[in-house]
Image 1 (cartoon, helix red, strand yellow):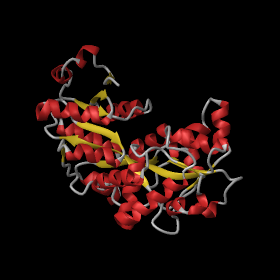
Image 2 (image 1 turned 90 degrees about the vertical axis):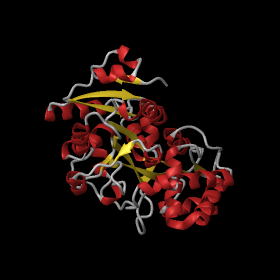
Image 3 (image 1 turned 135 degrees about the vertical axis):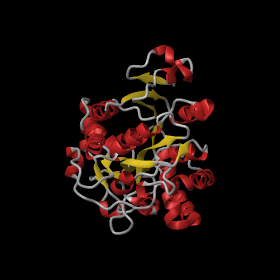
Amino acid sequence: MPLQRRHVLPLAALVAGSAFASQALAESVNIYSARHYDSDQALYDAFTEKTGIDVNVLEGNSDQLIQRILLESEAGPADVMMTVDAGRLWRAEKEDIFAPVDSEVLDERLPASMHHPDGKWFGFSQRVRAIFYNPDAIDPSEISTYEDLADPKLEGRVCMRSSNNIYNQSLLASMIAHHGEDGAEQWAQGVVDNMARDPEGGDTDQLLGVASGECDVAVANHYYYVRMLESDNDAEREAAESIKILFPNQDGRGAHVNVGGAGMIKGAPHPENAQRFLEFLASDQAQEMFSKGNHEFPVVDGVEIDDVLASWGDFKRDDLNVSVLGENNPKAVRIFDRVGWR
């Protein structure tokens, strides 16, 4: 997928980082974003309206953006990198591209679980990896925890994405944190034994698998379900209406959450603007936009949220520091390989 640029920069600026830099005036901030949501443009526009700082955006997948930042070095134009999932933020951190940010605003606004311990990146939106089920085929009490997905009673009844999916890697990384490597491996083996089919497709495909009867239970990020509920496609909407969402481990640690996050780049040409942008993402205005624009949960309490999310009521979320999900990622990948999770 080629890098894409939007918001005022000309196509010629794709040729070299210096061209990008030449567009970056003092009152601007350069965002390298792996978030491909049209609703994010509203975030950038709101930041500009509030601060007068123009936002220039370069889009690509996380690995592309990391490699570009490394090639451009600390003299490059990047101010901020945005992406989704702590595992991807960890990859960027391991390449040493983030500069620590010391901000009273972020310290006060964001819960401790959404802070990298050294301030290298921050989580600004929450993405719950929930359990979905066919209410005609299964009692929700049978699947009240992630651990239940490995119970032999679910043999041949579970749909899951492949092991190369970062969302599943982070879920297993959380299991490592809570149960140790041996316990997490036993869980992963149990899930493999219970799969109704070989892993295939994305999160939406897992939900469709439940709706079609191919499986009774699946795991997916919550916002895919909301998109289906609000789809213009009648079949997709009806499929979503036929299944139910469940937030696991409510009597224990709470549901696993991952993040949409961002950090300031080392050598950022506009560090003050970069910090102001990060602080804006923690504002009530931006937090509400994350929720209503892309159905993500805010990380700041008391913010007005998307109507569907609000209809689910309050629920307990795992307060594990999300940086641990990245740190445990290599262990998770090795476990997936050992148990044959394709």
